[in-house]
Length: 248
Length: 207
Image 1 (cartoon, rainbow over the protein chains, first blue to last red):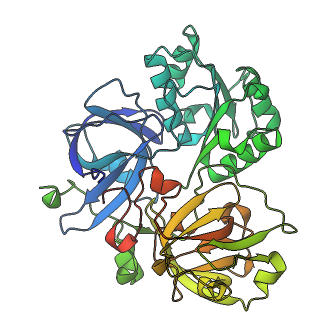
Image 2 (image 1 turned 135 degrees about the vertical axis):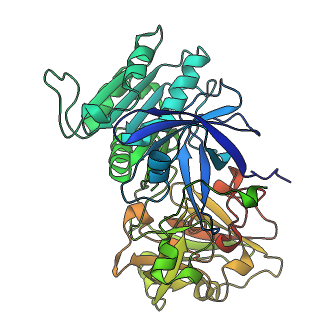
Image 3 (image 1 turned 90 degrees about the vertical axis):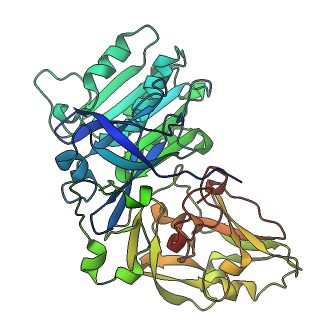
């Protein structure tokens, strides 16, 4: 029999604002289990009268900090759970969670590559967990992140990604800003397309090197990028996707 | 105790109560008007000219239908509520398709058949007890809301088993295999519940 994933009460020990809409919530857990990068936790909120709401949020952290987990949560304006995290929760508060969950959209050192990561918006969160884990393990798998955001202000983990990219054997990080670009912007300025994917793959030996691709973001981005990569000859079995619907 | 835990300052949106459909939204689910897309890999491209739906395994003789043949089996409209394990529930979704009962009438089942595994174009699989796809509980659908089913939602055709979480409603379905013993499918082998009843919150293994 499989051991059930029990609900447990964690404590929020740090809230780090990443952008106007996205914050990181670091939660300590009494019954922590090491996760695999790409997995998520379920969160359950309970009102005074017993009303409950649940959502799933991706893990942003590597697995190197025993006992704690960092969730990346985007505030959805008409949402139910994410506004609670952003507007009500403060450090020291308790929150009920269970996890880690998910066994397909995962990459961990040792799984090989080369690694082609494509993220849109807060879809970068599970990919960040993979890059952090890769770095923490000193894993040398060639890796590239192609990251689509609306504006420069919407780029999550921007400085940390720059730092990671600057380390020896660090990942290549390519940004595209689809709505508005700052003066002097030298990154991409359009939606992810086949040319962009080919150029990203070129950083890790090209598509002929048989990369392992992880795509996470809004449905439109993931559908079109997955279709483009398939057209470019990638085997569907090497292509893992996580489409969200915003978790409101 | 976890049951007594209250989230400080949480009130909630309470769309279940607001909708007047409290009895139709399973525990832990919220109502959505959208139709989110969730799949583990790229959307497969399926050619209608070679599309087939096959019932095989523990049957006297396997049977296949072409695209034209299956749609000639007396299509019906189904209006059902659907729930995804990612927590959303959508009420009154309208589908057109054929009941699995109708499909099974075309084969002679081996009495040993107790389980089915749905197979999809693209390689996806999901397992169900035979009893969960009988008596009007499951159908193969090719239209949603009066329109051909979009590829991202499982077109040309998908299984729809509305009383179980939506991962059991295999997209891009190409057949059912009858088995005497259970054989966990894709998500069932990756930590998700073997049965997946939303009213019992059978989300993950061990729930």
